[in-house]
Image 1: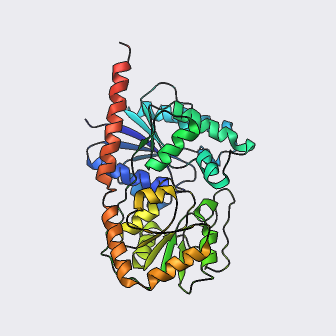
Image 2 (image 1 turned 120 degrees about the horizontal axis):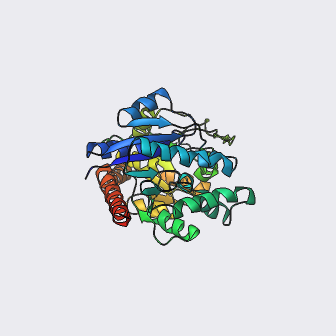
Length: 362
């Protein structure tokens, strides 16, 4: 059964890539997508990409994690309800959980958590969220509780989300990618890493410190300044460079080694893209990466720059191992396909719409 789906997205981080790629695959399967965007407007190339797949609507409301208080979020649910009526959608897929909190009636809701303050602070600070941000956690919790199904991009993040928010069930549907498949090769001798470096969870400082120990050339791709004034300034590595997605993929595919030093990753889409490009993976030893890439990646202590530097040097000195790990990573990446992701999400969509139909009072 084909569905008309209202899907939220933003143009700031990985949610854009997730939503556009998933929507394109759903559209190929016969579903109709309407995008509902929040936050800073997309670049013209992004708009063109989105409109190639779906109708695109955009709100002036801020993103949930950039809002200054609960009042900033009040308009978003009303706008989503109006869009749902105008486009006669069968289901709302929310990629920002807090926006689900204020929805009343209407079609069923599936909410995907890509990250959140509560799990970020548990990982990064080992405790609770500061008092001035508690309202965001409560808005996220309310969004989860007002959803028909909650989904996370990995089993590890699903388990943490369920524990932190005391939820009975969080489904795990792995992310996927349309990034090009590239035959594993020796590369150009460089090390590449891609992330939103302004986020301390991406742990750019350990990569910067490792660069003082290794002679390898390290390139950091991504934004160093965040939308809320955050900033990462490396001391040894050249400043990170934000690039369009196609050029980012070209740089990754040309490198000899992909590194991710993240301390907190609900999934790690850049790592999947690097694996599809046949790059050997050198990853922080965190639960999500162990779960997704444990049989194919080499791991390091993300708190220890010397351990990272030693991993870089060892792999750059071992071309045969790099080729073997790159090929293994690519084989593993093929398990996280857009076809499987879209099929799993479609099963969830149809489950909640069928349940909603049964529960409608005649």
